[in-house]
Amino acid sequence: MKKLLIGLSLFLLLTSRVLAVDATRSDRQIRDEKKQQILEHVNQQLNLINDRATKAMLKHLERLQSLLIKIKTRVPAVDITVAQKKIDEAKTAVETQAAKEYVIEFSNESGLRVGASAAKTKLRADIKAVREKVRLARQAVVDVLKAAKTL
Amino acid sequence: MKKITLLIFALALVAGLFYFFNQPKPDETKTQSESEELIAPAVPPTVSENDSLTTIDAELSATELQDFDQEIQALDESINQL
Image 1 (spheres, one colour):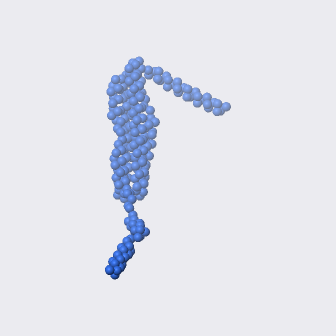
Image 2: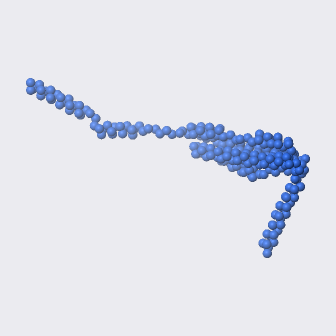
Image 3: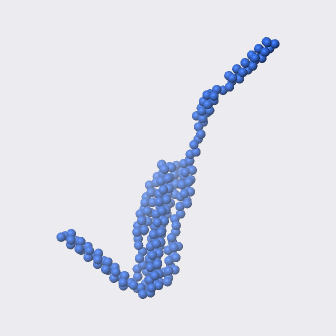
């Protein structure tokens, strides 16, 4: 009986949430069809760029990982702990970024541009932050290589 | 006349025997060349540690992360139409 009540409560909770989202969307309908299309395009592009950027960064990190292993194989005495940590951190940050979804928020038609611009600025800042982590990971691998040359 | 013939024959025999004993035997030749090979074996072409690191260095320099900033900024054109 308890299970049935819990299940029913969860069902009602989820249903009410879906209905609420639908209501918000209908409130935010745009009359201008052209603007609607542009908005959809910008929203799509934001997520597309995020997808491409994160995929490129992951590929880059995989390459760095492979080079780090190569260095360790050639010079086993070299310490790769810091570089490995930086790569792992960057990978986690990129994966978190890849899971993000960018939605343009607005209350009325006049706020479309502001909402779109805010979403774009957010994506730009997020990508920049993750990119910096990848750059630091690369620098750590460069440092390992320099150290390996001296051994 | 007989003596001269015998002398020539004897000289030819001595010369022949001398030549025969001074020739290296086929087995000896083979052993000699083999031993030479054992003494000076060919050095296999191996990559030195520095060469490998140089290669890795080149590979690392070649890794360049694509910049998506321009693409993001290009969205301004569409955003301004809103």
